[in-house]
Length: 188
Image (cartoon, rainbow, N blue to C red; front, side):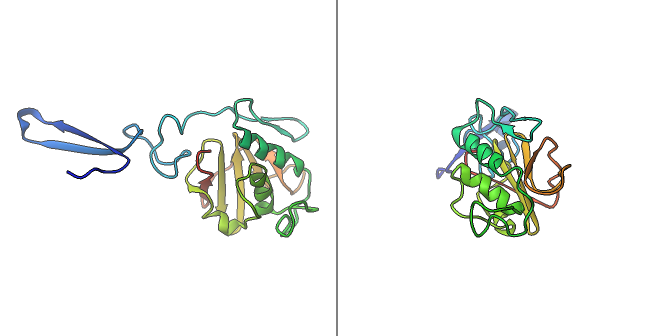
């Protein structure tokens, strides 16, 4: 039998040696595990998935990263904090990083750049193919052709749903992801 890469072969022999049942699971995965969560679409292993600490949202709208967050995740949160009071501006953040306002993908791109996850601004439609498929452990970008937002350390970074108007800001509510493609940076 040839080797099957990245899999463990599990075989059980039925009583009397008549039936043979085979089950293939990705290496490091638990049987019945759900796809995504920081693994690029394969079932999560114990080292890639699990609960993460949640960022704190202060009254002034600033997010404080959890102490246990990876340094790159902290940098994403700190970058987003820098533009959290900027107004919504269609196309904002796409011609230059530091802009007078930001649209949804400009705001998400600015945050991701803080953690060195992208090198240039990415529009909503292109964020549908960015990174790895599925939800991440620390960062998930939700995108469709007309809007994008991110969930970073348990808080939503979005330009919509603001009580103070429009523009990039943090939210405790995560909103439904229906109609959106979820993507994440590998390992995060």
